Image (tube, rainbow, N blue to C red; front, side):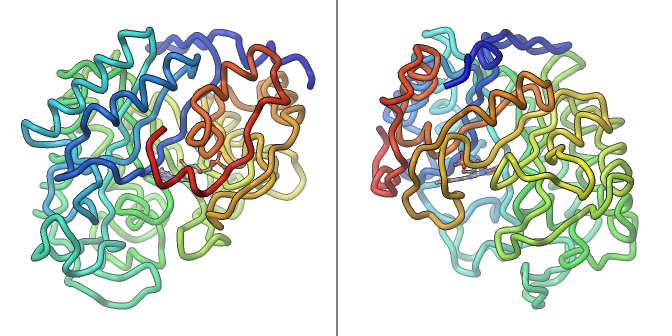
Length: 363
Ligand SMILES: Cc1cc2nc3c(=O)[nH]c(=O)nc-3n(C[C@H](O)[C@H](O)[C@H](O)COP(=O)(O)O)c2cc1C
């Protein structure tokens, strides 16, 4: 293995300092009965922090809206009991020197009618369309959009109040924020729709409202993706120019760090350059970026099959070249809490392949 020194440099941006360049990717686990994260969830994140993960992004956690999550074991981010649970998660992670941000989430139209925890709550989205473009419910009214913006802002304020080190907004993969970005799910003709820039309006208002609540020094990370869960080939931006037009309003609204979600970090985003989505985002915005996608593994995550370990040399080269600043690791860290420490200690042969059985428990 090439020297991993580059991965273990400190990271500093205006309002976040990390001991190294590794990030635990947000991963929904579904181990929070009654939507409340308990001691086992806190211990799960603490184990990653103890083993040198630079920054933990929690699993997606639902903002205060009746249709924000699908399922009774997905943690939410509102109400006294859930917030107490999260406060304990923060306490455990901080007790071993870790840093942690919650991933604030609304699933939008991916929710099925009748899903728990609120069976009567209908799915909501910009135009009431499923990801495949089928009409399911009425479009959100402007008043409802405003209420959703405020629910994100409230979650950001609560994150700061209970001690988190920042927030991540989940604007990727075809969930609510991304449903506004994507022309297939956003057919609105008001200020929340229209061209690519118009379709960023919802996210812009959310970022501005979160910033208003948390002040200038509290990190706001924004996760986005080209791909959608039902369409891996989908693209919000087909050229660097389009990507710049998409990102600029988000930068102006107050994003500190972009988390650019791809399924394979080594794939160039546009023809004619080796830069991946994170590399382009950094080049176009000047902001720090997190890359992600099959780090250390030979199969991407959406198949949910097992995957073998692979060399980290390609990753290290990109970090050395400063194509991106931080790298998020998903399944390898789900499988093995010690993954980062093993890499730091040069124990490459001890890294574990991803076994999908690991999804069945919190270890
Ligand atoms: C079990 C599982 C749950 C996931 N849940 C989320 C989630 O809640 N929010 C999110 O943005 N991405 C989620 N992802 C995507 C990961 O954050 C990450 O982008 C993806 O797994 C690719 O990284 P990897 O190849 O290192 O696993 C999930 C992935 C897995 C495997």
